[in-house]
Image (tube, rainbow, N blue to C red; front, side):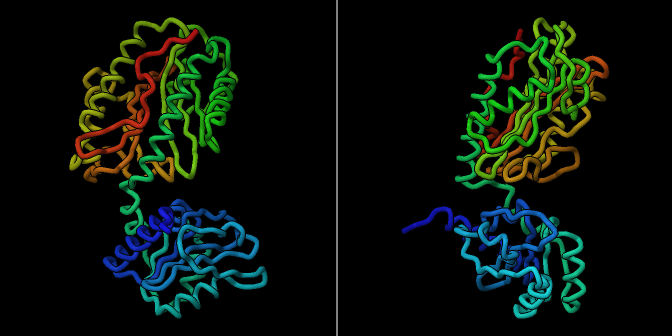
Length: 370
């Protein structure tokens, strides 16, 4: 009997071990994080109690957990040994003994392990050297496999449905930013998302701050409303942003919206395998700069997305990472005019053999709501 999930987990473990061998690493310590989800198929809680996935160069991986967390590691997709510790035991001593038994000499630790745990391990394992596991694990996660792409396709379709439902859900004028966020949050939960990572709403002048999270300010006639939200289902994130207008937009805003729309489309058109991530940022930024708003595009063009809401690859100047099929990231140029308004249009994109394909197809045209 084949078990696709377990097969995928074993393939990821094998790839991690190949990366370890290439880097000269003989022991891997993964703290509770998205890296743990990727390799173990489960994320354990981040608390004062030590838990981690240990991957020696050969043999079964080992998940170290306190006894009260044992139910959280039942039915793992990865064939891992469990090492359970009690409240009166020292988990650092347990891990150190496992590493010594494996003759570990070069140990890679991911960035989410508590510094106190890492320092304690270093004090115990004085004969070993320690290095960052990021360069080993992050490249494995850059390109999504077929199962991940299928899941993201489903999430994108759900987001499109949420947008359509929101645009038909009632007026913007008179609603507060917080009320709009509550309306969208309810729609996301109704459409199968397990949790909402954020729902940022900025109307009128508040939209001029890309990270405005919402307030009790009512939306006024003519206000553009920057709405950015992300949600998670089955351990993966989807993210989007649109900027509808409450009623009739100002002509100046229509002009700016058109610039952002063209910048978005220019970035999409530039996506293809082999192109540097920085070139996608430039494609969007050049359009905005040519329109005289270069100083009003104040963030990167995009970020990777998957198990984390923000992960590699980052679509930003200076990132020469070559795009490859399976990479997933946002394209979200924006213009922010202080004290007036902002506009941002976001798609989540898959790099294919021939270009870029958006997971989200909800209208990117200017939407007017009452």
